[in-house]
Amino acid sequence: MKVNTMKTKTTAVLITVFLGLSLLASVSCKRDAVSQPANPIGPSSIGVMMNVEASPNTITAALYQRQMTTITATLKKYDGAGQAGRTVVLEVVDAAFNRLDIGYFEGSNSVATRTTDSTGSLRVNNFGPLYQEIAHRGSVYIR
Image (tube, rainbow, N blue to C red; front, side, top):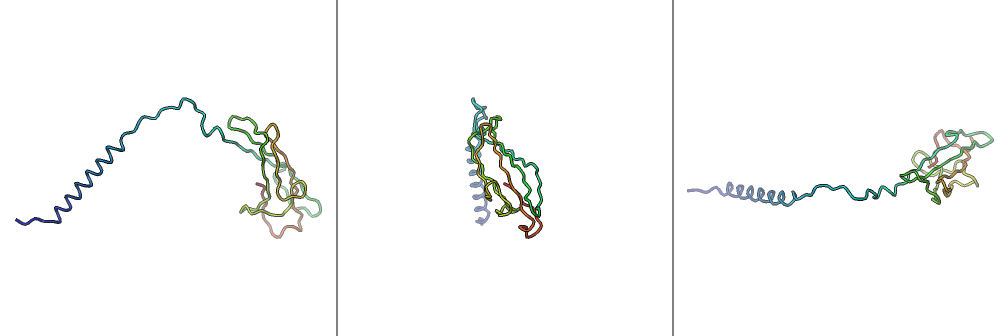
């Protein structure tokens, strides 16, 4: 009687794989039911929302006098409470978020750093560019 060693090896491998999968399945199926935490305060309680508005929200490059917009930012916790004493940095950037030296904030600075008041708000004026400062047509953003 001739024994086919290839068939015997294949059968042994299949049995080994089957036993291995059975062992993994028996270990991985010991899962408890999900329970509701007693106190729902978790990491989401540290979330802070920032609302930024500009008035007016669009200005153009002028010939002789810079146009001004007032930037107002408000920081609030998830429950609506204002975040007093927080520092916010504002800068003028292009669409790719590269800092630009076009126009300026109060004090002729390209970057403005302000601290929120007791209600979580801050306000800063931005003075737009003059026409001769613009090399090409495009948009400028404050972030």
